[in-house]
Image (cartoon, rainbow, N blue to C red; front, side, top):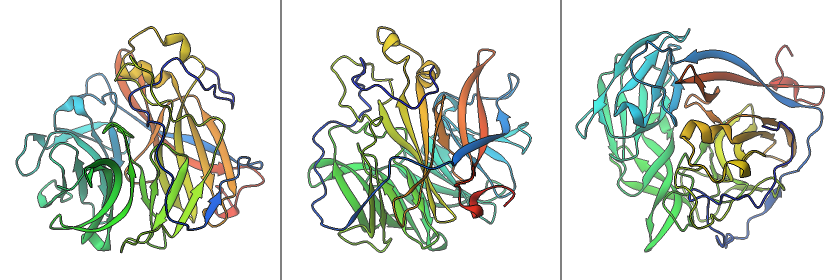
Length: 373
């Protein structure tokens, strides 16, 4: 793979998970801040924290897992391959136990996905198929279930001490399939809509529709098929409070070409989003330069990860200034605790998760975000 900073467009694969061309521009007229395309001498550095998934452990890390760290420092892993069971590891990566089981009943999961930890040690788990958020106590006891019937949720953040959730995903809206974010109450009733973007396929942003909460209580969302980010008032409104938009030459949203394998990732897709110390951290998957050479094969999910790089951007949302841009030669995702990134690697024939702590380094970095300053 190439660790350089150029991504070729026009790839042989135009995969199903990419967003189709022709997504309409927003009709509202709020001001748009342009994201600068060059950063100063500041980079994102990743420090390895832990590895999860030894050969003798129960279950598997899987090919497309979700990971979070709890308030107690434990790591919880959800993956489709484990059929509803969550894997729990200690802070050193030693396997401890499994939680939950496959099914539709209380405390059971079909496709457990995004997990958000509470400061009290509890955990909330979003289930794509059962379309609900399950809240469990630190000792895994069932506390509450919130049904999410209006959309298929892919990511969420908890608002107002658990009274509401902002859920991003996709659903049928006005007879059109759309990517959307909705605020729902504990009873599952939709309270507000935070933007709607019509799409051509339900697999748009299938790996995640990233969403984040900032220190001001605003909900940040991504725009399907674009390199763009919006901050919304969680009370709702017809327009976002802030919109950031960029047009980097390496971002290639598709559309897919006929015959592309359904298991392939999109040429470019924003996969992670968080706000830390008033800076927006975004991770975008892009196809690396070995992408076209593998076009005739049917690779496994882990092999697909090796055909992806991750562009890590840090942006000042108040100005659109690009603080840092770093390219990493692997597919990285964000953890549910919004403090780490992780990648999945094949090690001795099994999938292992490598968890990293990101930080800024360089003379042009903001002092508050730089270790040791």
